[in-house]
Length: 311
Image (cartoon, rainbow, N blue to C red):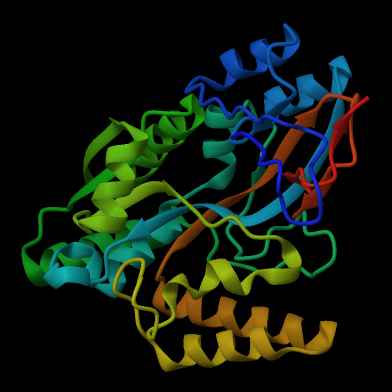
């Protein structure tokens, strides 16, 4: 991007910004170490974020995102009629998930595991509680659906091949589901672009193992409205007036207490209907050069450059 000389308010200090996409996160970090970039965004790799903090190569800007990691089941969008439309199957999936096991495999145990819509590491709001890890209950539900419907336990789970932590997380999810009686058809090697097209555009999926929403604590509505029944960009076909009502309360809250009440109400509905299954939060980190000054930070990690300059 090249700045225009007649930019509103006068010329800006930085004349050119180059945005590079390096698929491998560690390669992106290496580029920062070699002074080839001035900013690097670290996501889905808390071990690398911890390394960045210890190496003190620049300024760290962090923000905790709740429900950044979840399983997204298809509830019937675009005519889908598969097993995840059965509430008992989704309940079994929820009870089968052990966030600590996923955290150990995908993030070297350094992530933020949890099953609540609001994670236990919440800073300014109170955490909420999702359904617990209960493999025995999951086994019972799987067996019940098999006996009543003739379903053989098959469920297809997809995940992005990059970053590597996504792939490892989906492999762990497949193992957890298999341990309670699911027959998992796993594809954890889908390139990120085709995966987004498959889920968001084509809406052709059964369950996505590593999905999520990215929103700051003070504006969670933006991500959670993905399951609003009036939202034309529905994530997976879920619709329930109780969820909608909790969203309205969340958006219109004028006190911290009302905001928290809305989040608690959302969690109650999520535990009942299982429109999605959270398994962790994510602390997104942007590492920035100390000589880049005047940057404004949106959601703590997204740089705004209109007043920025290089010292």
